[in-house]
Amino acid sequence: MVGVVVACSSSPQVLDSKVDGSSSDGPRSDGPRGDGPRSEGRSSDGPAPACGKGEWCWENPLPHGNTYHGVAAVGATLYAVGAAGSIVTFDGKTWRSMPSGTTSDLRAVWAFDPASALAVGEDGVVLRLSAGAWAPESVPPVQVDLLALWASGADDVVAVGEKGTVLRRDGTGWSVSKVSPERTLSAVWGESASSPLHAVGASSSLFTFDRATKTWTAQQLSVSSPYANGAVTGLPGGALFVAADDYSLWRWDPKAATWAKYLFADYVAAEAAVARSASEVYLAGGNALLRFDGFQVARIATVTVSGSLQALVGAGDTLYLAGASGAILRHKGGALDKLQPAGALTTQQLNKVWGRGPTDVYAVGDTGVILHHDGKGWTPQPSPVAAALRGLWGTTGLTVAVGSAATTGGGGTILHNAGSGWKAQPSPAKHDLHAVWGSGPSDIYAVGEDDTGGDTAPELLHFDGTAWSAVTPPAGALGPLRAVWGSGAGDVYAVGGALALHFDGTSWSKITITTTSEPLTSIWGRGPNDIYVGTAYGNLFRFGGSSWQPVPSTLSDVRQIYGDATTTYAVGRFGGIARNDGSAWVKVEGGTGNDLQGIWSSGSRLWVVGSGGAILTHEKP
Image 1 (tube, one colour):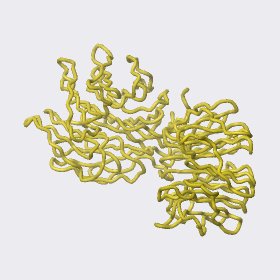
Image 2 (cartoon, rainbow, N blue to C red):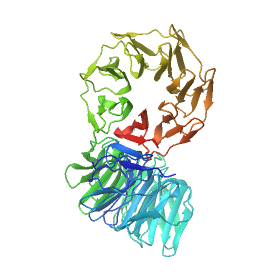
Image 3 (spheres, one colour):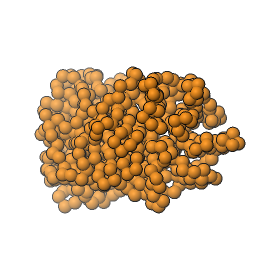
């Protein structure tokens, strides 16, 4: 099923992609798994469309916060591809999202001219742009992720990927082969239609394709430290540059027929490379743009957007960089100019979302970020701390946020908002706090952990309407607490790690939810006899009134559970969303690969938040 994701505003987007190739023959993009939903079929400078029933819509960043894995430039035209089938284009004036017809992550893109391009990605997907629309390309079946792409023309194309897979197109059509030994191939580059092809990847591998014999030969650049090679580029005449994950650059001198290795001045794993001359080779990765001047590799610019760079491509005298949180940047000899996203309120990770209704919703996250939605849009609110805020809950006249220590050596943060702004509260916590819940304004619990390591008593606090105080856990209760929830003042649960506690209105006691070793991460219920607990391994356990029973899930881990009278949702890593309408849990295509941390709903409206400042909303059908 193809998910529908749109942007709910007119701000531009950030692009992230990884590209290896020279500036003269178009870009290539590869990079890690993307994270973020799609914004389809709209210009970023037009009016914001409504979020229709059944759609998933971005509210921050805008037009969306997908990670881009590939970028291509032809003259003033850019294409960028990424997570959940995201594709955007820029014609020199306007950014526009393009429907891809897939929710698979797209990992690389190559543009032949402003109106013709190829994109490859997850599970062997290959798309072609023609007549203004993207459509599947007819290729031999490839059941692995394709990670990189290079071409000298429409009949000289090579894509590489997992398990040593090579997908090539020549004048006779497409064919599939494999390099030996099989290695995941992360980048590919060639000089021209008559020159050798070079692909790099795992275990310090470099493979060279001889066009005359149509064979690949292998070599290992480093035997003593076989780190993965992440990027390759070159120059006319045979010079090659290979970036490795041990923060180094290998240079092949064709005249001397020797390799030389140069260590970076920064601990930056380069994901992409572009060579203009022997003394002007650019590398991008982490938060840095690096340059090799023929003698050393040094940082020349620092990225201020959240997340790492994944792509780099050259067009004339301009470099375009892309990375996490939908970021696209431009370098033209000076500082980096941020092109996208133009309307991000934050790209810090958002950890929880909660509200009193659709016109009064809060989201909190790292570095003390607090956002509020009044039914029309999100606005930032002043925060008295820069600590990571991880828990959020409220009741009539009071909203509470909890998190990590605001000062070195301090205890967990507690913030109250009683209608006149957020104010830090005296906290008896000695360590970080992770979650908060209450039955009313004079009965609120906050839980956390001792981050110093070891089996120590968890943080367990209570607010009686006047002050916060520490609660003594039951004997033998050791380890962290990550979540708290109750059906009422006399039925409260707190879970985390291998520990589960229950309060019956009189005292706390240890309970057993599972005998497995999987850490407990989240809890929510719609009543005392209908409760779900999630784990770090993606499993769920349900209490139906008598015992806890395992329930199959579709997630790799569970970060939060929430629901209403009829439907339960769970969210987790890599954009994982699962829904249960009363029978079984099913996977939901939210159109994002961002790690999702929090979820909350009001009526038919649902919000999820996560990494890169992601805020998505969904109108249930």
